[in-house]
Image 1: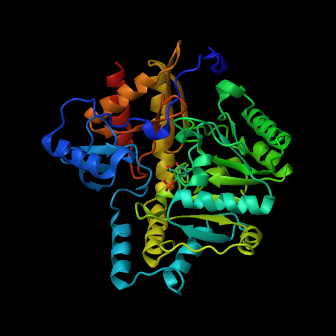
Image 2: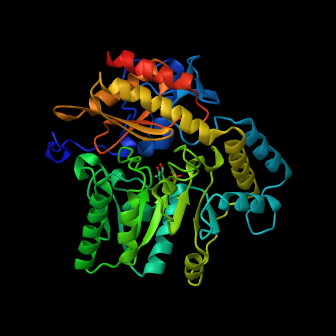
Image 3: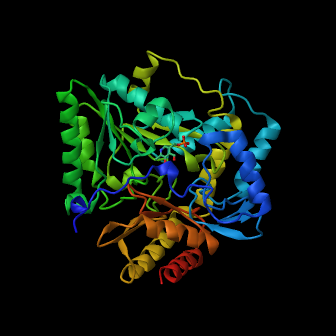
Length: 443
Ligand SMILES: Cc1ncc(COP(=O)(O)O)c(C=O)c1O
C-alpha cells in the first residue's frame, strides 16, 4: 500500500508520546508519592514518561540509575551527547562557577575560546554567533532575522515539525497543536518520505516547498523562509539520500526566502558525518540554530549566521539574553567540543550507527518494520502492517524495552517510529543489547 492511500489515522502530538496517564499498574510507594507531589505543584503542564515514571538518582556515560536499583541504558537522550555526567564537562562548569560567573557584558577569555572553536566547525561565511539558553529562543531569533532580511512573514515547515515553545515558535511547530491549525503565515509540507515522493525526493520535496511559496503569495503573504530540522526527527527521521535538501534550498532562495537549518537534534556530531546535519546535504544555510547537546545538560543554545544578516537585524533591535553565553555556559560548551574530539565521538557515532543499522535491517526481514532510516546515531525504525502505520507496536516496545532496562522514545505523525538517539559514547555491545531485546520482544 502506498503511503498516500493509507486511511487517515489519529495523529499524535509529539509532547504526548509515551506520556504518563495515571492508568498504569501499581507504582512503588516512593514513586507514587513523588507523582502526587508533582501533580499538585506542576499541574496540567507537567508531562512524565511511562505509565510507571522513573525516579532517577544518578547517571553516568550511557546509563541512568533509578530508585528501583536498576541501571537503564539510555537510547533516548541526545542532550548528554558526550555521556551523562562527563567528568570533563562537570569539572569545567564546577571550576568556572567557583571562579566567577556573570552575564556576557564583560570580557572573559572563555567566551572567545568557545566562540572561535565552535565557529571553526562552520563554513567560513557563517562567522557570527549569537548565544541563547534554549533551542526555542534560538529559533525565535532566527525567525526574527529571516523576517527582517526577507521583508516577508511566511514560513514553511514540515507537517510534524517541532521547533520549540515560544509564542512565535509554537506557530511553526505543528506537532504541538492539540487542536486547531497553524496561522495563515505558516505553511506545511510533507516530510521527505520516499513513500510520498518516490525515488526523486529532492524534486518532490522542492516542488512541495515551491507550491507552498506560491500559496503564500496567492494569499498576499510575503515569504520569509524555510525552517527544517535537518534530520526531520519529529517527522519520523528522514536522512536520505544525502543532498536532497539542496533543491528545496534553491527554490527558497530563488523566492527571496532564507534557509534556516535547525541543528538542535542532529548537531554536534550525531550523524557520524561531521558536526552538522546540513553539511550532508551540500548546502550552506543562512542561519543555523543549535541547542540540546551544546552544553551536555548545561542549558545553552545559539545560532550562527552571516554578519550581513545580523547587522540588518541589529540596526532595528538590540538583543540581550541574561544567562546566554555566561562564563559557565561557555566553559560547558568548550568542554563538550573538546570531549567530542578527544573521545572520538563522531567516528564512534559512524561506527556504532553502521553496526546498528545493519542489524536493524536484518531484523526488518522478520518483523513488522516498514523502514529503518537515519544517519549515524540518529535512527528511526518505522512500524507498520498491511493496515498502515502501527503506533501500538511502537508503544508496546517502548514499555517492553523499559521493562528490560532500555529507554527509548517515538516520533512521526502517528507515533509509529522508534527514535534512536543515545549519548554518542554508546558501544556496539549496547547496540547489540538493544537489537537482541527488540528481537525478543517482537517474537
Ligand atoms: C528540532 C528542535 N528544535 C528546537 C527545539 C526546542 O529546544 P528547547 O526545548 O531547548 O527550547 C527542540 C526541542 O525538542 C527540537 O527538537
